[in-house]
Image (tube, rainbow, N blue to C red; front, side):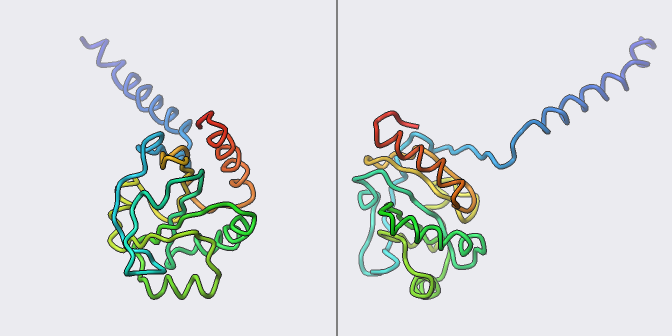
Length: 178
């Protein structure tokens, strides 16, 4: 028993070392989506641009598209906004979810920085974001024509990220899935 006690600190040290080593091999930017390959969550929320009109998940269906979660309080959202405008000009369908924001500020933002979105869902209370598993803005999802989530990107969309999103969108449009 005494011999075992002599080796106990070594065993503990090796155990802690293993878990630390294992933790270093995990990519902290890779956040799994609980909704991957599942239908976009059902919702009924007001349109940001037409507050009297209620939107549902049916408004997001029909083609392979991007869904971008954004807010005016998010500095990274401002950083990616010009690139989203470029994508929209190229014909990419982008739906917006205005996340935990003030509608007046969000509408002013879209007037000032232009509006790349086909439609914008107002998620003032954050419930839709919670149902999606949003960690924070910005987040961008690729959805297929039936409204199934095929890919998730956390962070700003730029030219490098667009290459990945474009590849996934092409796979989804071709029926290969992601």
